[in-house]
Length: 411
Image (tube, rainbow, N blue to C red):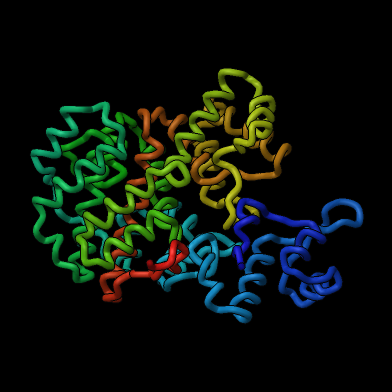
């Protein structure tokens, strides 16, 4: 039975014998695949070479689809073959692209509103129209929630606030693309207001966040804007798939975003940010990054915030955030900590920082409140959830896969 390379997830390279064993071929056949350009290889010291795990996984999937198409489906939902079409995000070895435009490039010149308009309607210039609602009207029940319990963690606050806001927004039941895009603007602005505690905001999403968090200066606002853009979408992670499933049922965009949030909060998705924060606190308490990393590896815990299966050469989002933080706050404790940890992790395990690590360092540099990194990620990613909901509404298809029964036979 095909595992679609699940055992290779988290690994960037395999040795020659291991790669051949994964493919079920001889070493000469493996070398033939390399010579034909099907598998990339690199020098690994001496005469040894190493082979790209992602290439081996793809070749294995392709062979299995030809041999047994039905079995190939079994691993498709776990880092396997694509399961649906989308025109929003492309991930390649050259980076991340929103509708054909570099996400890193967009983060340097565009607002999150412009990127939302690009993702939702394909036109960044439509941002003014979509977000032109003046001062955001936050329902009284949402204001009571936020002001009555300011210590409520951001994800929990959002999960409580969205249904309350949806109840007062009958236009959300209009599932035509243009109407959903306008509802998306209301949702994203509401989320920024809730997580920042600024329930009477006006102006931009980034301005609402920085104003509510008490962060001044254009440099800080620009960094928050860039983070929102880099988090806007990432193809089809579990949270986005959950949002699309909800949208496929005809649920409102508020419900689709709520579904995305529910999955996002798990420890293997947005919850990784909390693990990164815990890891950095441990490093600070011990004062020796190499010792802490080594202890984690011995325990089998791994190093959160490093290594991404879709980016063998490093997550461009994490690299961009760390570059921006280092450029704006050189010599700060957050930057010094990041430099130390990145160096030690690179030397010990050869992995590079992800967007999760970059967001936590950003939060430290700016002095965001507890949960600020998670809140920033969730607000940015809501743009993608709405974009995928629009695609799903437009398709008119219900996402309803079948399960292969493996239980007791009927009696």
